[in-house]
Image 1 (cartoon, helix red, strand yellow):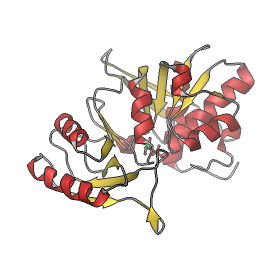
Image 2 (cartoon, rainbow, N blue to C red):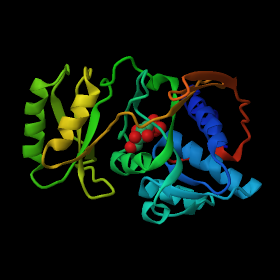
Image 3 (tube, rainbow, N blue to C red):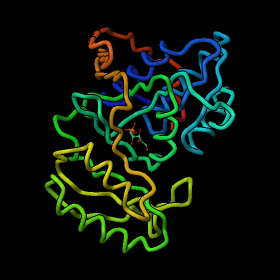
Image 4 (cartoon, rainbow, N blue to C red):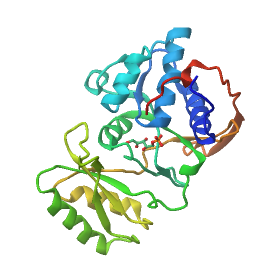
Length: 262
Ligand code: 5RP
């Protein structure tokens, strides 16, 4: 135990804890990336180690793969799995239609491929991730390094005809160097403020040469599990049209709370 968790971390934890109820024996499970997804991987690991849950995990980044192995989850590639039963991942923003912005952790490409290859995508989030309109969080766009400055200028020009408030794109950095994704690409963060038509933007961005993928996840997420700092959990299912509320006991002595890096 490394000390008292912040309300946001508690919210992330309870959302993660609830999400593993969707996982059953024999499933191939897409494992998301980020601090909320890391809680989920730890919860799944506990079920594997202590309850004998039999699953195979398909990680969406090298760091999630490392964590999954560390906590005892069998890791397989998407090519080995071919298809996934359920993917559980975090998000940077979600709206009322459960459309998302993802990629704050730089793993949006694998995350989108894995989520799209899943029967069900579940997003786990703290309450601060909910927005009326997507776009306050800078939209990550993965681009190939070749000619990235030209791609950046072309994206900024393209944004003039889009329904957005801002048009600046910045290269994501890691210290003094460009941040490099697991696929060896760069990330441009688009400071849009507000995205009027996320469907349209997602499509036109991907038509730009040099763009590999963008962080808009449109019509991919099925369920959002929203955690609150006091242990409340709200589960919204867009297909069923249901909203369920629940409360989880928060066990401070839980060994999940040690040495979480993400
Ligand atoms: C990584 C992601 C993450 O899911 C997203 O950034 C949310 O992260 P966190 O759970 O740490 O808030 O898209 O690419």
